[in-house]
Image (cartoon, rainbow over all chains, first blue to last red; front, side, top):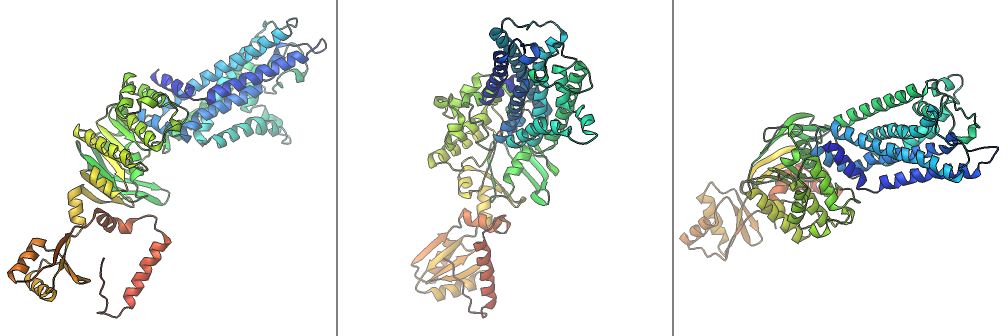
Length: 254
Length: 328
């Protein structure tokens, strides 16, 4: 508990998490407002369309999570941390937990904020949260952000440099995963199992009952797992990656 | 007390610290001296468990650093004054450190007061001058009221006032019975700050003992004598003693090693020799340091190397007997 409090103090006494959180909220809620504002009778607003910007917020949150580690290396406060708590896994687990919690809270705020602003702009459209799909599409965002934050913390721990870690995360989520599909024959099969595609299944999958146009929400996932196994697989992947990162950080000279 | 035994650290093929053994005693300030790149910081990082020794062992009061319970209460360290997030205030920086070791919050204000930073405690640490950063680092080291303190080059870049403050502070800490281990590449500073010395060069131990012994052993004191009857004095001295290690001519004077100035004066008086000058020359600490670590300096300038090379050649090419080397 002490270490969680310490990591919370470290995270919230610097500016970058606040800026990242704010940016994530502006992006996601802004996109929802844009969608709601441009919707009409032919293309009515629906639940999935409110979460159109969740992928953008995800990227910002991962930057925030990676920075939470890499700035500690940049300013050597991680060394000060290891001096205070020389058994390194505990403070690192505490850090990942605190960052994941913040990411989750921002995710929920972004998702419900996006839904709320759409309801405000288009009060007449059907935005009731009824089905399990509806709940996952909105409340699930926080869960995906939290797990993604753990992945970003792990990458930050392994690379230790802000630029490197952010580049890897960007290329991975924005370029590598989508581009894998272009590989002839096996590309699609591989893509079905890539972590962020699998995570996307939890938000968008099984199937969207509104039968909306693909363009009106986050692009649906082609992962074969059902939504809940998908988020479980995503979380398992994050835990394994984080365990590897902690092992590396523990062996390495700080 | 800090005990290192056979401490060794390799970085790839580079040997940073080579089979280093030393002890740092309680209640004294121990200087950790060596040229830049000698392995001082690496050694300190190994003491604090930040770097893993390739082999060997180092213990603080008999325990490894990572086995200490809440180590900040036992060991305080200032390795680098810039180990602070620049956007965090001095007080916030100390608060999270205190929280990590369950040190009461009130202690934060105590140490801020101790180092004289109370007035700027709420300011962001990134805007601090080097002297202020150094004080904040010392405040952090003192948070847990530790028995053992390590400081890596604490006076680097400080103004004279700051240096004096740190020096007095170290003495105070040692007088309170704490173990104080402070590294520096500045020998003159260590002579004023430390009582004991651990001297290393290229990762190897060169000397361990008191500062006085170091100066005595490493420097050779000579006596400069000026007299109108210099030749007679020289002959008498030659006849007199086997203790004389050196007689060289220095302009119109003699430089005599291995004999006390009193003995030379008495010898002169007994033989009715007039002395114009009898001047004991104490070798400086710098000379001692350079003498001991001279061939262990890691980074030498090209100039330095060619000078040495040239001098060697010169000596070899000189006809024997003509080489009267005078020292200034």
